[in-house]
Structure formats: structure tokens, C-alpha cells
Image 1 (tube, one colour):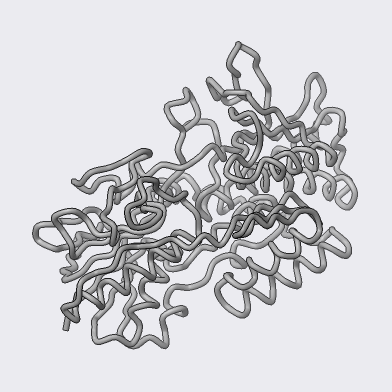
Image 2 (cartoon, rainbow, N blue to C red; image 1 turned 135 degrees about the vertical axis):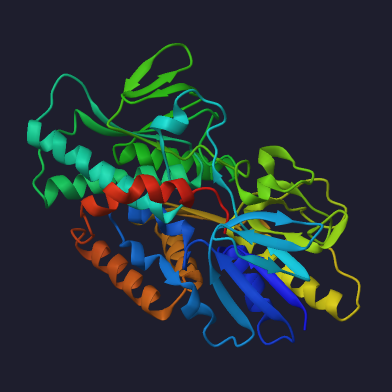
Length: 430
């Protein structure tokens, strides 16, 4: 029986193993974490809207009814393409007949001085936990010492969906902390600032939605600065192009991702922009048709003959993972593989309570409350596990009615262990 190794329990890897469930093949899903993370909601963990367990689900629970699929908890150190073997950090070796690499990406700092050392990304569950602890700690310090002499900024760098969602959630967190926790956070000094080098927010969306996002954020108290580049990040804030310095309590980095430094980035194959692995039309590697690279790790082509690659989105990861699983089965059956064709199902971003934008196929756009309801429904559908869906739905409904709920807890134990956890948690090695 053929052996298939799937590296990574993200959207791509998870949907690949689901495609292989019940087939006459032995599948091993490998990840250094024993859970799947629902990345689109990490910003809510970081801003104390959801608990970490609400957006994570045990890998073994996901595959427990799939008898031909096993889970291996471990960090993948290297892939030997010639020997068809995967080497783990604990010394284990897993041989394969087919390999699917879905190790995702990691925060990209793009050689901006000090960014890697002083900015705080939001790509993993460790990142979200760390950021929540840091933000709440800084706000408690402002309250305790009633700081004066300058604004206490929560600075978000990056005006894409993650940056917009995080900025909107942070300003709501400030309002909750003042209204319900009675923190002394003077609105004239403690502010949320969103910075992006582009001339508008949400560049991948229709222009009207980017403008709506900026207007809505500003109406809620967020300072939006577009066309503004960051040259340097320090432990005290950022220096902008032109020399202006902005002090900040926290710098949240939502400026993009890269595959460089991840397992996929270490493969001895061709790489494209941002380190993404260059794959064929069927998502396999040139010279190694038994290996597929999917999701954020790959420069996934938009379709047969299309010169462009698709963005690093959850839907791309889901569809490419499924496709790779199907191609493995076709190869096993002696049939030719098929080219990948991406089906654009649209994009969404929430701005905050009762405000979101949605760009759907056919040019249809939604915004405001209708967009927010569409965003809620879609995220509940894709969230793994009935318990998680129920808890998140109740949490969102409670916040909609009253706002004060949310785990505004500073977990000192998690903060103390974070340095070690992040050292192995942000490299995308399964």
C-alpha cells in the first residue's frame, strides 16, 4: 500500500488528508503542534475576544474516524527528495511514496531594520497569545502609572485584511477596558494607529471597500495613515520614511508573510517571490512528480496557462490541498494528473462590530451590517468542531448584545514560556 506523508495541519494539509480519507493508502499527517489553528480568527485571540482554544482543534480528534490516517507529532527538519524521506527533529525518519507539503508561511519583515526584533507578528497561536498578554500588560501599566508626556499608541503596520481587522478589534478593546474595566485610558493619549505603505487600505479588494474600511475605522477612533512607509522599528516605536518617529506601546506587524525560513523555503527547488515554491500546473515539483506543495508555501497558479499566481488566502489553501489529494489518487490509479484551477469565492474582512466588507464573485460587494453577517456566517461554517462553532457563536452574540465578555487575561505562565515556543512555532515546519 502506498504511503503518503502530509506535512502541516493547516488548511491545506487538513483538506489534503480529508481527500485521502478512506482510500487504499496509508496517510501520515505530521505537525509540530497537535492541533489545527483557524488563522482567520487569530486577531480575536490577540485582542481578547476569543480564547485560544476557541480557534484551535486537536489534530487527532479531526482524524479519529479516518482509519487510514495517522497523526505524527513532531517537527520536520528536512526532506530528502532523492531518498523520498522526511527527517524529524527527534531523529525519526518517515519514508514516502507521495508527499504533500503544506507548511504555510511565516511573518515577513522584508529587511526593515529592527522589525524582526521589536515588532509582533500575528500568524500563529503563539503570536496571538503573546500579543494579547503584551497589549493587556501595556494597558495595565498605563492605568497603574497614569502615564503622561505623550500618546500611548497601539500601532498596527499593514493595511491588508489582518491589519484592518486587528486595528478595529484593538479600538473596541480599548472601549471595553474603559467602559467595563474602569481603566484610566485617556482617549486623547491612548490611540490605535494603522499604517500602510500603499495609498489605500485593502489593496486586493475593490477600491470602494478599501475607502469604506478607512472611513469606518476613522469614525471609530482609529488613526489611519496610508502612503506611509516604515523604515525602522525600535523598542519604543517606529521611524517613518522622512524621519518622523512614532512612539508606541506595542507594534503589531501585519505587513505580509514570506516562505523564506520555513521548511518549504528550504527545499532545493525553484522559488518565486517571497520564497514561495514554484510548482507545476498540477501543483507538483518539477523533477519530482510525487511531491506536491500547496497553500501559502506554494506559488499556486491561477489556472491552466495563467501566468499569475493566486494570493495566499485560506480558500487557496483549502482548494490546493484538496487538489493535491486528488492528484495522489490519480497517480496511484495510473491516470494523468489534472491542472489546478482556482475558483474565486471572494474575500472578506471585518472592521469591527456590525461592520465588514465582502467582495464576492461576479462583482457583488457587501459592506456594513450585511457584510458583517456574511462574514460571521462564513467563518462559522469553516471553523473546525461543533463545540468551537457553538462557543464562538455564543461569544459573538453576547458581545453584540453587551460587549463586556472576552478573556481579558494576562497569562504570565504563557508569557514566560513564549520565547521558547516562538522559536519553534513560526517557521512553518509542520
